[in-house]
Amino acid sequence: MTDDSANLVLEHLRRIRGAVERTEFDVADIKTRMSSVEQHLGQVQVQLGSLNLRMDRFEERMARIERRLDLVES
Image 1 (tube, rainbow, N blue to C red):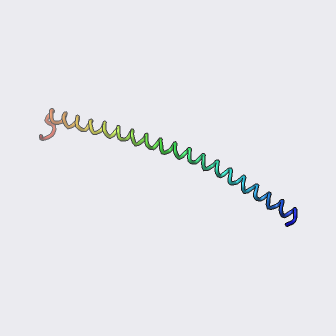
Image 2 (cartoon, rainbow, N blue to C red):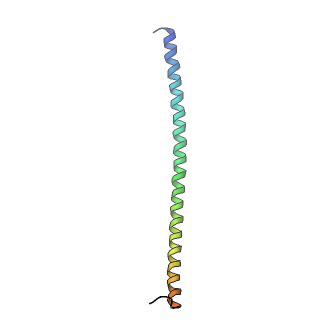
Image 3 (cartoon, rainbow, N blue to C red):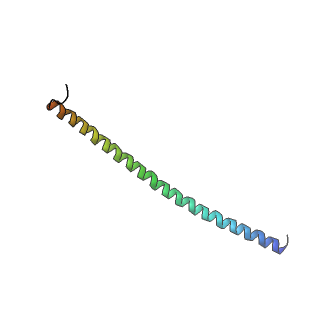
């Protein structure tokens, strides 16, 4: 190999290494963001469960009120 072709190969290898390093940083950033999304989704599911529980209690209370006021047949 001549010096010019060796230098050309080294230059390409350096560019490839730089691209791989940037890709590694991007993947690390994506992993961090994905973890945040997963945590947020978990919090939303917990809140949804709490809201469903409250709605169930409202439903029970409403049924009890309807029975007391004789709005529905027992």
